[in-house]
Length: 429
Image (cartoon, rainbow, N blue to C red; front, side):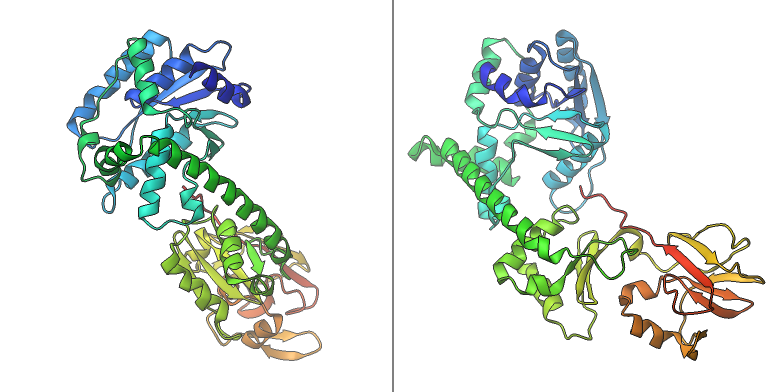
C-alpha cells in the first residue's frame, strides 16, 4: 500500500502545501500516518471539520490534536453550521467542502481518504437513485476545489487493507457512532446491503469499483464529444459587451436530443447543480417555444433565458431587482451603478441636470435623421435581449432622454454612453 500511495502522490509533490481532511476515523488516520511518514514531501497540514451534529463529536478535536502532535503535523479545527432540511448527510457534506475550499490557497492539495469500498458504495447508491453516466462514474481520483485540487490517493485500496495497516502500526482512531445508524442511506448500504452481496460475490466491492472506473472512461468520451459539439454553439454573440455565457441555439438544435443534453450538461456543470432526468423537460420547453417568446428555465442558482437566437445563463446580480436611478454629478468621470456595473460618457459631455434612469415605459427620444422615436420600438429594432432592457442605463439631461447605453446610433449626436454591465457573480459549490 505504501508503494501504491507514493506512486499516486508523484503528480502532487511540487504543490506548495499538502492538506489532509482528518476526521480522526480509521481511513483518515491511516492516510495521515502514511503522508506524515513519507519522505521529501511539501509541508503537511491537517484539517478537522467539527459539524456539531452529535455530542460525542465534541471530544474528537482533542483526539485529532493528540494524533497530529505525535506525528508533528499542525492541525486546524474548523467548526461549520450544517443547513437544516433535506438530507443531513448532503448538508454536512456541502458544509464540509465549503470549509475545505476556504482553506486552500493557489496550487495547494487537499487529500481525502475515500477508498475502494467507498467507491463501490457510491456507485451502488447512485444506481439506486437512477443516476446517469456522470453520476455513475462515481468519485474521480482528483478534481479542482477552489484554488487547489482535491485528491483521493486511496481509491484502489480496500477498507480491510487500511484496517490491517492501522493495526500493524498501533494506530488509534475514532469510531463514529452515527456510522451504525442505518436510517442514513449510505450506512444502510455499508452495513446491511453490501455484506449480504459479498457473501454471494466476495469480489463485489472491487468489481463495483472497477465498473465505476469504466464509467469514468465513458464519461471522459462524452465530455470530449461535448467539447466538439459546443465549439459550433459558442460563436460570439452580437453584443460583445454583454459578458454573459451564451450558446447559439441553432447549433444545439442541429444535434440529436441525447447530444443536446450531453453538451448542455458539460456547459452547465460549472454553473449549477445539474437537473435530474425528470426536470430536463424544462430544456425542451425553452428550446421549442415560439420564436417571439422569451422562455426561462430556472435552475439552482441561476436561470437559462432564450433570446436573439441564443440561450443565456444568468445568475448573481442579473437575478436581482433593477436598481434605482441616480444623479450623475460629474459626467466627465465614470459612474458606479449600484448592482449594475459602470457607466462612462464619451464624446460630448452633457451639461445641465444629468440623471441615469431605467425604463419605466413610454420613453421617447430624438434620433439623428429620424426625428422622435419611441424607445420600446428602437429596442425591438436593436434585437437586444429582453432581459437586458430593464437594466439598460438611460441618460436624461434636464428631464429629457438623450442617450441609451451601448446603442450609439440611438440618441443625441456626438454623445455616446458606454456601459460595462455586471458579470454573473456566482460560485458553484
